Every structure is written in C-alpha cells, then in structure tokens.
Image 1 (tube, rainbow, N blue to C red):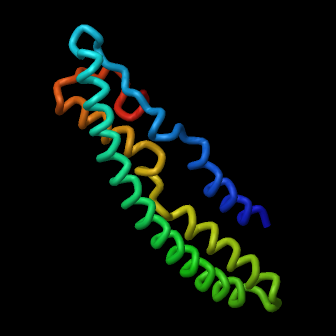
Image 2 (image 1 turned 60 degrees about the vertical axis):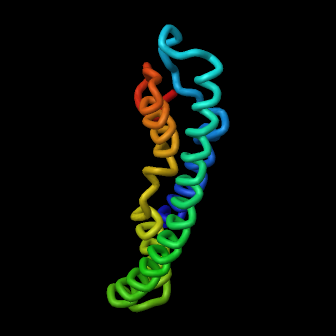
Length: 134
C-alpha cells in the first residue's frame, strides 16, 4: 500500500520550486541596460504571476475531479477484484494517487519562468539561460 505516499510527494514537489519573485533570467549584459532590464522584468513577472494564479485555480479544480474519479473507479475495481473491504480501500487509494498523478503540473513547475523569458525576449533582451531555468 505504498501508492498513497505518491500523493504526498506530488503535493510537496511544487513547494521545492524557486519562487517566481526571485527568478531572474540571465541576459547578455552588453545588450541590456540595467534600468530597462529591471522595468521589463517587473512587467513580465506581473504577466507570469497572473498566468500562474489562473493555472493554479484550474489545477486545483482538475486535481479534485481526478482524485474523486480515481477513488470511485479504484473502489469499484478493488471491490470487484477482492471479496473484502481491504481491496476496495486499496483500489480507492490507488485510484486517488493515479488521479493526482494525472493532473498537469507543467506550468506550476516551470511555465511562469518561461513566460518571463519569452516576455523579456520580446522586449529585446537576449536570454542566455535555457528557457525557464534562470
């Protein structure tokens, strides 16, 4: 019954990501003036912060729906496979973990930083780091 622990890892993982307020893309200093860089970075962070907030709201809704569907399907399959409640409980826990794992986390783990990088590039800065890796 190790599957339920994957939910904990899924929840803790996003907490290890660098805060968006601290993200600073590496730019070519010969092509970016410091004052323009700071002003553009502030504007691009605002765009990325809004996108991140919108994404998190969608992700929470999707996560809840996926976990609930996983619990229901897992409990049904577990009950069909075994003749006692342990199988149904295991199926429900497995289904919940699978539902949580099916939730898209791409934007939460790197998307807002890539938004900042693309925004800075569109404003004339040359980004030297990999997109979203600062």
